[in-house]
Image 1 (tube, helix red, strand yellow):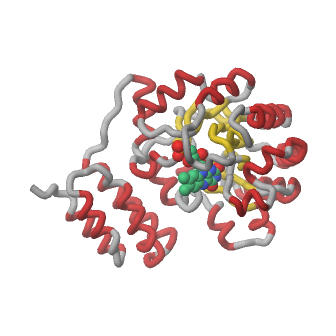
Image 2 (image 1 turned 90 degrees about the horizontal axis):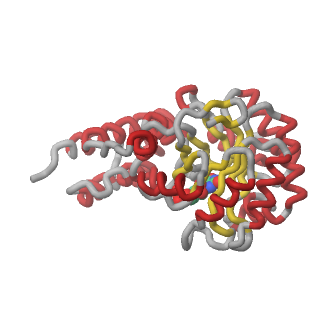
Image 3 (image 1 turned 45 degrees about the vertical axis):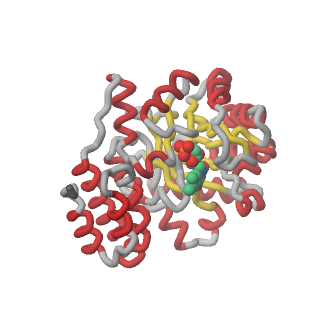
Length: 321
Ligand SMILES: Cc1cc2nc3c(=O)[nH]c(=O)nc-3n(C[C@H](O)[C@H](O)[C@H](O)COP(=O)(O)O)c2cc1C
């Protein structure tokens, strides 16, 4: 699959997840075979005000490219300037625009899913960004404000006409948040309407779901969010399953190895104390379902230092009888 002139190896995208898809997590997921990793949404206003947080959110490494950096905002000029600066910094391989966030604070600013109610403004924003960058440009949308999908079809068409290179659809309405089920029929219909690639997202909980989404909807690739938190290996598993009908389940050793690498990259990126605070919750996601995990999780929730985390992981290498 190609997005503009960017050849994508494989069919898997990591979904943008605020507070989660930071550089250390992206590096891990990339190592686990993900084709395209995504930053969390980053505010165009934050860039305008030269916020330190914004600069941290857009810092990247070569090993994770092509990284998709997701911008949110509602002001065409600010968003275009921000996209252009990211391109100049060579921080990303793709720029993605958020049309899906349904958090009140974001909607209040007229950003995220609020833009799906404003087709004219949406068109203006996308044309401005298109003019400002040569990088591949994508948008991530929801179904819209009602379950029919009409908002999604309209915005996606506007995007295609404005020169956007691919559309990611999470087919839940603005009001649904993450409740109910994603309506994959809307991904199928969108794919039939557009000539640019469509990436399907929503409720892929396992490898088999990814293949089912691709065969039911005809989408060009799949985007996985929440399922990657407990299984970062899902990306190579999906590609393997699509190609051969088989995939490997990671061994205890492989899972613990991933936890060790994440511990090191968290400490390098955030510094030891903040990293340890975050790792208390983060590391425990990986061991879901492994025998003995509940007492291990308790111990992880009290991590005090990098060495403490590493020694707890080491201890867990040998299964208790
Ligand atoms: C904690 C969390 C944070 C999220 N942050 C973002 C975000 O920054 N940008 C975005 O477009 N979507 C965001 N989403 C939505 C996801 O990208 C994705 O569309 C949604 O989780 C459905 O995919 P899944 O079923 O594979 O998790 C977030 C979702 C969650 C659960």
